[in-house]
Image (cartoon, rainbow, N blue to C red; front, side, top):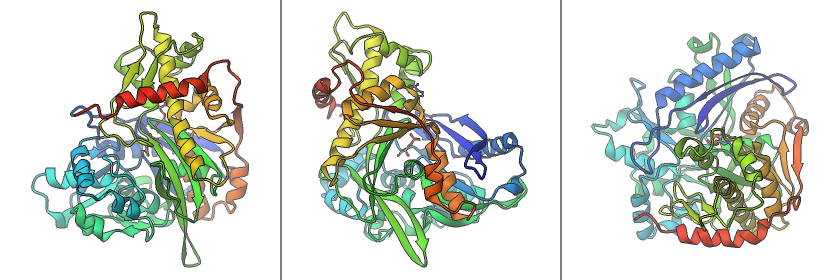
Length: 487
Ligand SMILES: Nc1ncnc2c1ncn2[C@@H]1O[C@H](COP(=O)(O)OP(=O)(O)O)[C@@H](O)[C@H]1O
Ligand SMILES: O=P(O)(O)OC[C@H](O)CO
C-alpha cells in the first residue's frame, strides 16, 4: 500500500510474479502543506487489487500459502471500534500540519530524549504528532471505542474482519512512540504526547503470525505472516540483511536505508536510527536495526512537473529532456515541497529554482530537478559513510523513478560508486512476499531467494561528461537559501 497507489502481486514457488494489479490512490490536499488519504478507499482498493491479481494468476485463493503486507509508513488514522468507520481521513506522512506542535516539543527541550528513546528527530513526518492532532480535532471522541494505527494496522484489522489490532516493529518504529531499545510503546512518550495506550495496536515481530483473512473476503482463510514498512520491505527484498549493504527507493520520496546489524548505530549527521525487521527465533526476538536518510520529495517533483505545472506529459519524458542539454544551464532545484528531511530536518524549508537566467530552457529546469534528486542522496550516503567502518561499495535501487537512466547514471557519477538496478523494480512488494513466504514455510532459504534476483543494469560512475560533483557544492548553496522559509 504505497503513497501514490496500492498494488497486489501473486508469486509462485520459483519467486516469479504470476499476477498483479495496481490502482492509483486519490490525494486530498485540504490546505497547503496538508495531505490526506481516504482509509475507505485504501481498503476498497486493497480488495480490488487482491481480487484482480488473483484472477490474473488464474489460481484459486485456496492455493495461496500466505499473505504479506507492506505499507507507506507513518501515515495514521483513528477509527470506531464498533462500527469500523474511520473517524477522519488518514494524515499522510508528508503532511506538515503538526509542525507547530513539533516546534513546541523542541522548545520544551524534548529533542535529545526523544532521539535517545526512538532514534528519530522531532518532525511532523512521524505519526505521534499526527495522532495527537486527530485526538484533539475530531469531535466527540469516546476513547474507549477508538482504535488507532498506521496503514498496516488499518488494513490488517479490515483483512481479519476486525479481529486483529496489531502492527509490526518496523512500522511502530516510525511512530515516535516506540522505544528502539525495548521495542515496546514508550510510556514516557505516551505521556508527553497524551496518547492513551489502549488505542494503540499490539506490536509484533515483522515475520510471524498476525492472523488470517476473514473467510467472507476471499472465501478462505489465508494466513497473514509478514508486515513491514515499505522501505524495510525493500531492504529485505534486496538482500540487505547486514552491515555494509544499503538501498535507495526512489518513489514519492527517496528513502536510503542501510542495515546496521543487531546494534543501534547513531549518526552524528542527523540520519535516523530505525528498525529493519524483527523475527522470533526459539523464543528470542531477533532485531535488525538500520540507519535511514528520509528525503520527502523526489518522484513527487516529477509528478508536479507533469500534473502541477504541466511542463511534461509523462514522467519518462524527463530522461529525454535532460539528455537534450549538455548541462543544467546553471539552474539548481531544491525539492523542499514538504520541508526537508535528512540531513536538514527543516519543516519550514520550501522548494526553489535558483540560478535562472533568460537563456534557461524547460530542459534545464527538468534536468535540475533530476540532478537534485541525486544530490539529496549524495548527502545521505556521505552521512552513512561517516558512521560506517568501511565505505559503502554500491547502491542498490528500486522504485518508480529508478526507471530513469539519466538519473541513475548521474547518481553513480556523483556518488562515485556503482548503482545496481535489479530487473524486479517492485522490490518493496517482493520483500513483503519473501518475508511472508519464509515465515509461512513456503520457502525455506532467504539466501537462495535473494541469490535468484536478477540485475537489469549496473551504472558505473564517471561515464558521462558532466561536471556532476563540482556542481554539488553549488546545489548545497541553493539548499541553504531555501531553509527557514515558511513562517
Ligand atoms: N521515468 C521516470 N523518471 C522519473 N520519475 C519517475 C519515472 N517513472 C515514475 N517516476 C516517479 O516515480 C513515482 C512513483 O513511484 P512508486 O515507486 O510507485 O511510488 P510510491 O511507492 O511512493 O507510490 C512517481 O512520483 C513518479 O513521478
Ligand atoms: O510510498 P513511498 O514508497 O513513497 O514510501 C513512503 C514512506 O514509507 C514514507 O516514510
